[in-house]
Image (cartoon, rainbow, N blue to C red; front, side, top):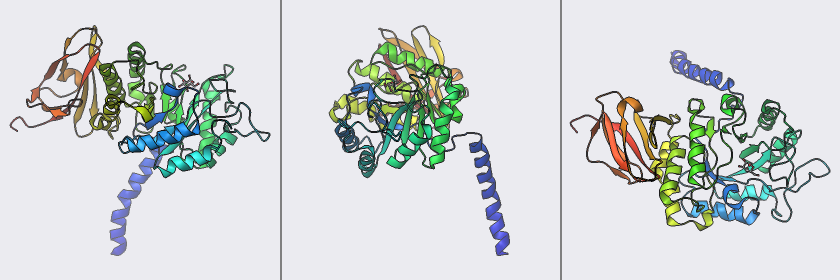
Length: 396
Ligand code: GLA
């Protein structure tokens, strides 16, 4: 009898597990990471090569003290320029003595002690993009083992100085090397969208850059969002399109423009990697990066990237499904003037006649009125509205 009961309980469980294995086996990178887009900070967009271990430690502290860590920003990612120009006599990477004298392992220990994770940077070429340190091409196993032994949790793997070797001859080596260490390390493939990585990188990494580097301007930001949108169908839990890191807080855009930046990245299920100096943020910056309702859209378990569903000249509607039959809608005004923008249920994938409750994610308020078939508002120049739509019975 007991055995019967056990069997009844076990059979369905084994079934679920087996299915999961089958699904994951199709993905070479079954490291279990990136079930939702990664969140954290990266040194490049603000500091470029001017980094040192104190900046990294203080950034970890600031993520915690500002409350951003609690909201999900857990990865503290060191970008280019952290290593000596040459490997040591045994062929190992060496952290730069003048700027990282305590070494990366000590930094990882510190960052871990703050409840955060440490990311590092290398390149699928002979040198990194700055030209100041070696790349990992031909040294994948050694470098992966080094990163794992230091306690690294995330690797951004760039694309410079590759002597025109095709990505498929360079990136899989690092994937295999990381897997062989046994340590789950998030792999961010930074191939700039050159050879359409959305079409092949899902088997190799947890995210892939779909664009060239972002700059801290409106034009650069919206064009990165556009280029990334083309590949929306390829994003899914475990592997995400990456339109590059956030510029919010770096000073080149207006507050409304930064709100557009953060809204589009969140709805696009992009990695939310802060690129400003979090030790010295304004309240406006913290309010944008710390919008928990917008973050929840990005981290929604359904993991479906929003798409541009209607364009009318200089304004447009982006929308995507969320868990619980909800829908996120971004009404984007690219023009220098006010524009009325309307989301039609037909365009955003809600069945006609569905009554919805509308939550304004930047005002943090639920609109009193219920909406059926369309939702239209006036949007400021270079700005957006971001709404969460939830189906409701008509009478409530
Ligand atoms: C490339 C990457 C950037 C940054 C720099 C560092 O340009 O795309 O994100 O990592 O290299 O040199």
